[in-house]
Length: 277
Image (cartoon, rainbow, N blue to C red; front, side, top):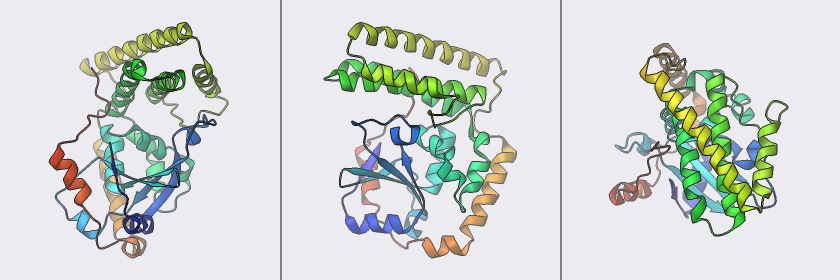
């Protein structure tokens, strides 16, 4: 879930501490239309008091500005979310051109394939199942079709992660078929066509999930559950070098308001991302 803030000063502090800003969602995938918003994800340096806090949260901070959503996540949580499967969006940013072109975070892009693991694939499968279950709760064809399209994209992204061709930009020659299918799903006004798509996607998700778990249980899964130990070590070295840099020290704030995180803890408002049922 996202923690919503409205304090302009806190927003500006987060912007100051930001290492990377990139578009996310449909505008990044290449599937946006007139009904789509442009949202931004910002990876920021945690403030001194946040770094020293007991709080270790996978939640992201959301600030709305002129109908644009700004999503903030600190670097450590971003990396953990990619590895734990707590946020598939973070995984997509890891493979983005923005990450590739970032002077400070390019090391993450160079290591991107090391992040492909059982947990993130399972998360995509879980999100796909969740979206299909929520179709019937939507009030109109537009929202119903969005859920079906999201589920289909989750399925295809899970498949690409498993076969080593993951690419969040679904407007390339190799992925145009995904974009075309999503456009067709969103445009459909025939409930029979939608039901057929739901049935097909659900069957394919179930098949992928069973195959994934069978390979894991039989110790023949070709991807790690988390990340290989040698890659974890390399990741730590790169993060340490960044934290010790003048860039990091000059961008780091001393203080961030932690109250929104405390409130989430107090209310026990936790979502199990990508839970497979």
